[in-house]
Length: 188
Image (cartoon, rainbow, N blue to C red; front, side):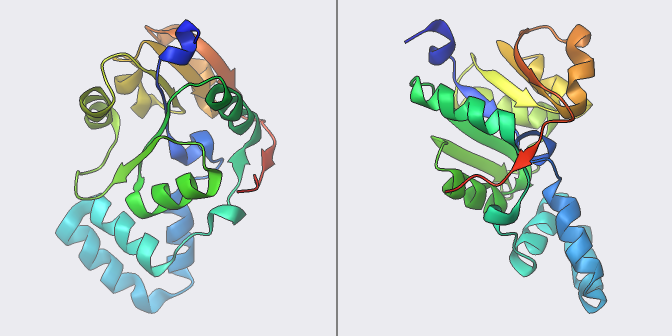
């Protein structure tokens, strides 16, 4: 097993593994059913963003087979898995969506999303990874919110607009997948 293969790889979902944001996809579907907007707002006010994400995922489930994936990253993950590397899907998306995508791809050793544990974003996500997976890890993400995770990571994978953050990162960049990566719908 190479050094890289021994370093667990944690992958974000929205705009990293996927080219889209699942919360925004859920909101688009909600706007087509305006009678449900008050119920959504109640969930948002009562339980915050994680409760609102769960509600959207339950009322407007997304089919992982129809989502747009970052094709080059999926291919990279398949190769890393074949080399023996442990892969984890760790996302601020609803746990329901994270589980569905993980089942669909069949690549991940664990899948963790937002819900009862709170919104897995930024510093909270970094602390969760360290506690659950360990202090040494590689993280694949896409945004400024991921800087808090990369600052604790041993290596980074940059996706989408995050390729412009390379100079601001502490860890070594293992790979980068730009904004123009073609999408594909991987078979389960």
